[in-house]
Picture (cartoon, rainbow, N blue to C red):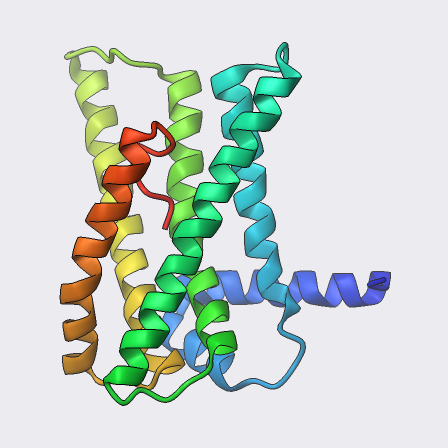
Length: 208
């Protein structure tokens, strides 16, 4: 059982790393890839993901149907685990084929932290759905909202791209050319996962 002091320490490490992935991602990811301290702080990212799935299930189903609520949450979480595992296996396999050096543990930690912009975006869209549900007006305020939302979306997307690159760079020790080759192959994989999740009505946008 984790002691309170250990939990506090891990929480502080998580907050420091989470801020670092945005404020100084290169230094943060390089440190995460080589540090030998307790790595359990990355599990807090999974707690945020679980919190979002619970939140999304309440929005979609409501609290009046606990069984359906549980089913919806389990489906979301199972799809997430499947997508997450698929990406890890894909990266480590191609990375090794291209001469990359690294461990599944380091790759998992770095890729997990890359879920932060993804989780923030999903939380953002869900909150906006509650407070500013569609359809939105064509008036000035409606257009202003669209511009702000698009700006935030692009910012989070570029943050995700940076963390994606740093994950492959530090977890597998790959250069830019090899990362580019993996990217050419990962795009069809993401499109395929997105299509399957969409057809099954699990995610309209893949949680990756």
